[in-house]
Image (tube, rainbow, N blue to C red; front, side, top):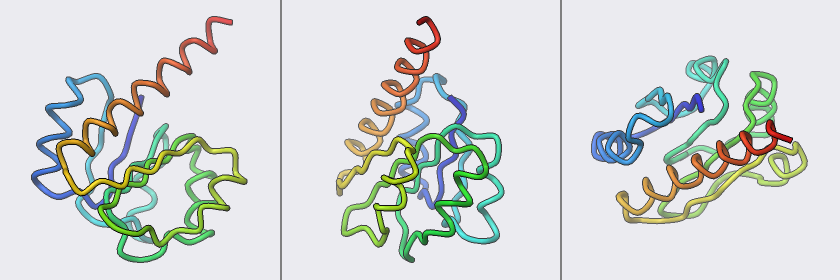
Length: 126
């Protein structure tokens, strides 16, 4: 699965690389998702937003959909500033990981990506 991760810190970056075991092709962007960075999501299957200080707007979600994003993972140790109704109504598969522990959060992220990839493979077989 081709994945882009936004707003990741150095510790999470290292933990993600270790947990991934070179399974998914992950692009790392240390900056948050915004007008200047959204284009990096093009040709990716999934977007992971590690922390979003600003609200993830309706227009950004639609932009991600227009770029072909099929999956979104939102990770935060605190409250999300995102209107989930846009994601829910779009049909995009998503997961919310609300976890303060970086090691556990990264493990859950990889577990989610693995599950989605397996589901995609199973659908291709039928």
